[in-house]
Image (tube, rainbow, N blue to C red; front, side):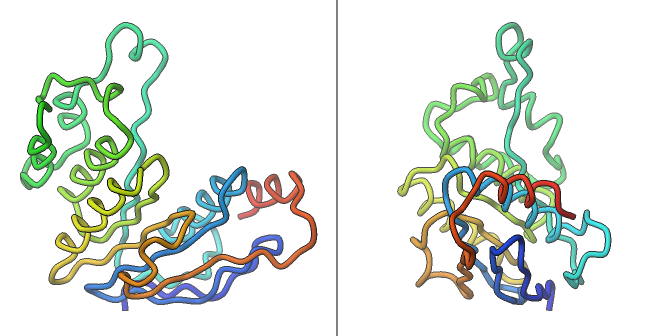
Length: 202
């Protein structure tokens, strides 16, 4: 067992209990809209062990596939290229990060901010895989075809002893994953206060 997550209630949002073992893919479906990011942030902190009094049992470290962010000045005056991104974030001892160049027309000089959402997510994924095949990934900004491609990459990457947790706002991979978890809201009307409470809770 790599991770054991007990059932949690975040301000009337119920996350069922689940476990993650080697070779498994767990998909967690979150509600969309304004509630997605606060819940994602909460789960990220718990699954990576960065909260105090964490009820989650973590026997193997998982790495979150971080979303590329660029400062205003870099975006306008010195955009980050794929080569520079790799120089800063990739593990050069594992060439898996270079698989992004299998995408037609991409080179080390390609600006990251020109990439479509699914291609950018693949860049982030391959770079994370250069460090570990125990990972957590959210599929925001990825179209259905891109999501299918990424799911296929992950299925291959976790063989034989890896594992992945995918966080999505739909159930497109419900029948393809090892375990499917749906986060349910059990309260009344969803108010903006719920979002604030989730964001501030530890």
